[in-house]
Length: 150
Image (cartoon, rainbow, N blue to C red; front, side, top):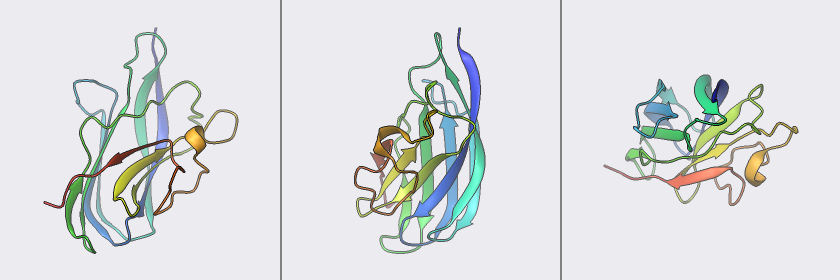
């Protein structure tokens, strides 16, 4: 039987410019119906927002993936509207320490979205060191390229 869980997620702007009209959507459903949606009017470069409550499930009968979505308008170069694919998935499993914050951020020279999860052993999953950066190289748990500008 699946277990309902929650984790706080902090969103970071490592884009290199201010972001406007940020929309975050989290879902544990293959249908894409979000369970949690949050809006941020303005997030200055280098700042973070949250924590935002993220619902998910673990165990037998839970969905295989957890879906993450972000869209925003960037004011710098490149400017315009950016978004990630609706099917960007990264699994929150029972090894994730949900008493700590997970990280979700945008940035990098490749203009991507990233996640970083805390491990129950006190470290971080996937080689993530716990510090979002604008050019993380392999320092993240999952990532996706962003579409845009539009």
